[in-house]
Structure formats: C-alpha cells, structure tokens
Length: 178
View (cartoon, rainbow, N blue to C red):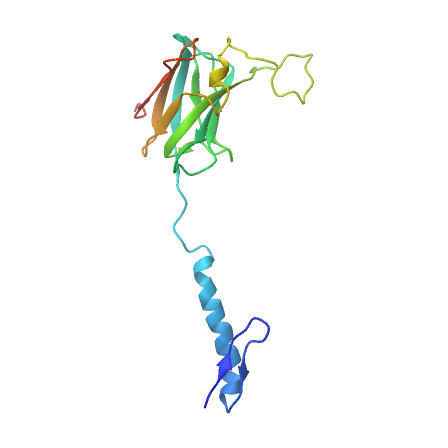
C-alpha cells in the first residue's frame, strides 16, 4: 500500500517502501508544472492604435489644453492624453508615454495649460489658467463632460466640436488619413 501527500511545508511523506525517495521529487515537479501557466505564456495585452484629432469651441481651435481620453465601459488601459497645438490638433499618448490609445470608448475632457509657462510662476504650479481661450467647466470635469469618443481598431482621427453653452458637443471618429 502506497500513501503520500504533498504540502508546501514538506515536499512529501511516504509511509511505505521505495517510493519514499521518488515521491518528494515528483511532488516538486508537479508543483512547478502547475505554476507554468502563470509565468507569462498567455496572450499579449491589447495594443495601442494611433489616435489624432482636432478640437474646436464654437468653430475656433482650442489651443493650450491637454485633451484627456478616460476609458469607459469595457475599454482597457488607463486612458490617453495629448496637448493641443495652435490649430487645436492633438496626438494621443497613453499614460506610460507610448503613442496611441487602446481601442474602445472614452469620455473626453480638457485641462487648461499654457504651452510656455510664465516666468513668474513657480515650477511646482501645474497650470495658471486656460490658455487659448475659455472652455466651459463642463468640458473640464471628467465626471460631467458630455463628450464621448470611440477609438477604432485601425486607429483614427477624432473631430471634437464643443459649444460655449455646454450643449450640443459632438465627436466624430474617422479613419486616419493616408
């Protein structure tokens, strides 16, 4: 009769015969084999796709702001962001600094920031106000922004149109231009 058991404290205890030398080694091997699937042999995570866009407020470009895409629903990742230029154009970068965003749906909000900080502002001040014009507070607050955009699998260009009264804002997602 052969009886043995594995435990983390002792590799094996065998009560009878020659199996007492084999059982501890067998127990260790089985434990290691059981851990192999956990060592990164799985599918790679979702990939980033290129995302560009343009944002306007009542037809005028929104400059000196950071556009932030915050994931909603089943969208993976931690979001993406990008600064706007003088024409309101932006390119998204994920929070790790890699260009692009994950495929999915996002709430879009803005953060005002001057492209070149004034000389009299301490270096630890993040923003001194909304450069590039005044954007209504509803577009600044990630909890209340009505703007939602979808990032497509092949990457995309997102045209975001804001209004000064905070109503009727839209986003249109198109394939990237060639």
